[in-house]
Image 1 (cartoon, rainbow, N blue to C red):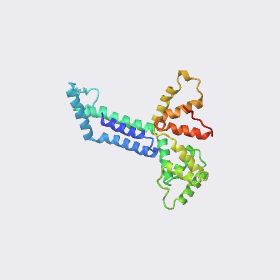
Image 2 (image 1 turned 90 degrees about the horizontal axis):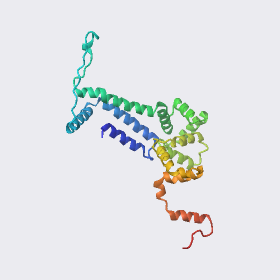
Image 3 (image 1 turned 45 degrees about the vertical axis):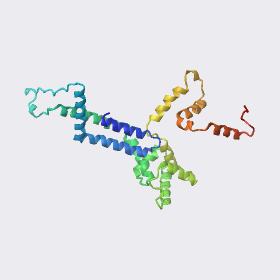
Image 4 (image 1 turned 180 degrees about the vertical axis):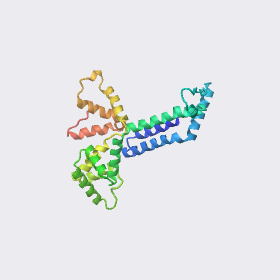
Length: 268
């Protein structure tokens, strides 16, 4: 597999890990973009790719075409001697094929992760570090529909609580658990609203696409009259098959048995 494709596949598999936070995913995306950009100026990287491609062509009897000479008549262009002409096929492929490929990959990453999404992720990261600027506060306030005055006051209160840096550089899961265990969810309602809204944002759309694919397995043509409640109850264990397989059936039976005082098991 091509080294560029190997790098993209590796990062894609990392991003599909459900344990990965979106802040960590953003750092991986930035590193991926930088690595692809560095390939543009890495001559050793291109030399290795070209040598491998040439070896494959020779192995399968594929002839590598030579550089076509360009005809530059002086009658049409007085500066024809100053125009750049490829001297080797290696140089031609680098400019005409490799550079456009790298530019296309970088452009695709920029389009997928636009500036607004990146700014929101960065803003939440600064919020967890207590390093919010005015622009970050305005961005989070507008995106998560917050009360700006309450949000700013909550940040000041949290800074006062963070005397020993026990809350610095913690993830969203820690913050939500800490607010719940201390019974202060209503006090820091705006802060909690940002954390909850940010925590449910998926890193990639792969899980959503898998859920839609499994929907056709549950709601078939013979089950078109299925209600929404039953569909949700069947979809949950089907999507979370890893968790469903670890459920002990006997524990489920015992749980139903304790819900009603009389005996539910049938003696066989």
